[in-house]
Length: 260
Image (cartoon, rainbow, N blue to C red; front, side, top):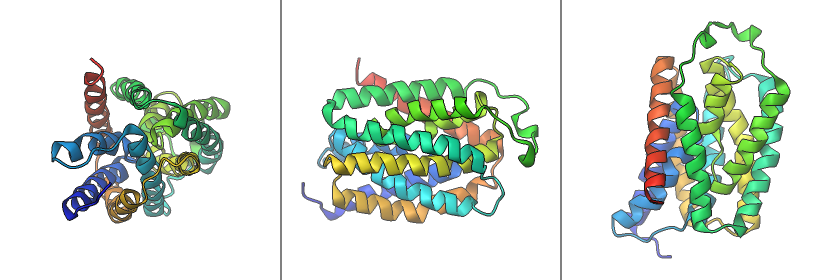
């Protein structure tokens, strides 16, 4: 694949825009960048990526995007260490299994898994959440083994599509585990960093990563993700949830429209 200046610029803009939004709402960015990488280059007359290539690029990019987001949130007191340990270890194992096993799947199969995950997340984000932000940070409690189970299952799907899974973990943490929004956003970045480690390892070991596009996306992510995280601290939590819900719903609709 040849990389013209136009192609490089388009990849950078996709990486920057997606990473800014992901840092702001606490996701690794694949919910936005997966369909953008699939559809925008060919729409502009540039070379198209396969689903395997998109998932490989996404996995590496998300790894670095979450580093920037976690760094921006490190001093806010919103990182819940117990939550990160239980969900982080589980999602690391699941994402490696999914990332490694995706080599045996077709492009359509990978897109199907992505569509299922996006649809579930979209539905969950529109369910009303009451009282979750009234809990003091030092009194946050949750079911540890339920959290670990959801993280493991999410990790398998996330590893397949090269995502970190935060677009599904965030609604699970808000609705099922009843974690306050700010704690969810900050902690989900740390959890999805571990998920991205597993996904990236699986994708690299099976040769699904294109180096140059991945590097371009990484550079864009390192610049934009911390900017998005800092912007997110100044936005109303309901607005953050609304932005995330709209992004997920739009992606789900687009993915499923390609199947029918």
